[in-house]
Length: 456
Figure (tube, rainbow, N blue to C red):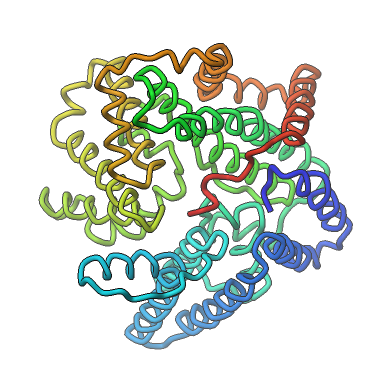
């Protein structure tokens, strides 16, 4: 069930909040656990047992790890736990990819029915891994309460598409949190802003990209190719940043402070800065649990390059089980490596050029992300950089121009900061009310509404 669905906004959320706020404090975590199970079951009922069994097994292993008297045995349990979680992820997400490539390489015809991927498995697997690794490291105590651990992993605001929350970020709130009307006052504006980003911008921008695909990449003009590329660039930002903002708002309504996941990445002046602003919780996860344990940049230049290559290859694979995602990860590795090598110094005093370069890299990168077939991606690139005349962009040019200009403006910090600063004022309340009802009206007629990151 999507946060931007009418069923969620008008049925599930008000009913759950009413029950949650009326529940005595000592039972709220149980209410949250049950509500999150219902939420997940409404979206993917058959995957619910997989998630619940995973929580139970990780609870048992983390407890045994924390109580282990010998460090070696604790390390063994950690390896067992990590292997178990990655095996489940591998089975559901990568079995088809592995078998298809094995058939291609060996000339075999192995047939294996691809299992349906549980909703949010990439996100909750990384949360579980961060928890057990931090327990092993002694950074956090193991969670004695199975209900509280369930809430940490299954809390519905961040379950299906992040942010990737660390246990230490919500540990205090799990045990003792303030829950009153001020939570609604703080969380509702963020939720409405995120909803409007999804319903009013992402959904409408998606129609441009879908129309470009329908026309066929080999048939479009250069101008329409650039319009399509920019539309997808803004669509994926408002789609995912909108979801994350809704998750933060929902978390606040429940008394939790879910970490910020986006910091207006399209104002970045380097590819490295872009990844410090985009999907920040995932970027920091890869840094803390893969890059730094591999040695980071502490073991010489060659080792640093190898570590970066590993991290970006895994980053690409995490996003999807196909070669375009692997290439997408390697694409970003190349630019981050080049920036470290010389480009950042070369462009240090040219801020405008740095921004143009960064956005060009990002726009091309999103095309590689969006187009699964590598040969079709190559066709699209030729339409961008070899001039192909045509008037196909003239159809609904005004509408497309308004959407792209809106995308550029609302990707800046100005509007969001203004609304959040004035959320208690008459003007701010009025803006939020208009955005909410405009979003609801748009969702009533929406033909396209799923979140892009739900498939990861």
